Image (cartoon, rainbow, N blue to C red; front, top):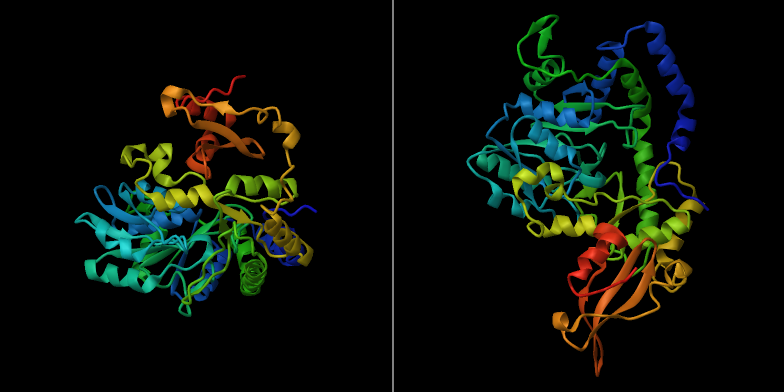
Length: 451
């Protein structure tokens, strides 16, 4: 059986008539920018978010960036963001000239840890940007309390959490503004790129709209140095056709998540944690395991597609080298990046697909996969690799203890009288660069793999 990581087909089949009607309506009207479809969707989505204003924009990144810009945040300012999120959150800060300041997440929820925010606040801090990651609401009460205490703006990143609630209140309605993405894969997705900024401040909404329209408040009159970021009529019509169904489709995701949470019982797997205050919408079903790449390879062999959100934390990305944040400085974000794996989650998954994912995840590590790829790597694992004596002494050897997919997993062990003592795990080194690069790195420790 093949299980895709995501599929739009079931939803598109259900909504085919409505989506085609939306296309025909816009096409026949011959009006494609800033028209009735955009206005109708903005009103409907504002109501959905329990907010008074919604401004359609080109994408989720622009929704955040324009909100920050409208709040007057710019060069020399700092904005607190979680260290574990998609890079668009930080880029929005960078694009307005400010500096993203990374705060570690709660390892259980993957969201920003409110207890770690205050220590990062300086006289340059202007805003906090909580991200409702994977569709799970942040703990908003303490975040809002900190913001009030220090006079900071709050801009919610809701790109993955359309319809999630915190203590019964829909996310996106807590801060000064919120940014949503309607990328096709989102719970509410367009048929292309799209986004929206939501707020209860009409003056702020008007400024966001002007900034996204070349800084213009009316035609050929420009009061800001703006951008070109507008929600087009076609995408607005598609989104308006989907919005009435979002509630029940989110409920279906919750049902699938419940099946996973109740059915997966593999001790190697850390399942998502849901606090009492949260009702997630499960954009992503994220599990963690120290054997992440092995699990991904095993599931791929079984026909199950997975993803990693996100394999390189932001502070270690090349584009943020200038922040000079070394590896190890944000250990929780790095731990999540090294261990997180996202299982298939989409509206329309069949019971057979859900059962199969649960069965395969539970079987991982239970001996059923031991012989996978054995022929491919037997030649590598035939011998024991001696470590140079001047590096680690006489008693240490490298022995092959596992074989998996494209990665070579070795463990440095000491042969003691009472058994094996694990002293050094080379798995992470090899995972970073694969066998070829890992071989070069481990050579520094005196390990010679040969050709």
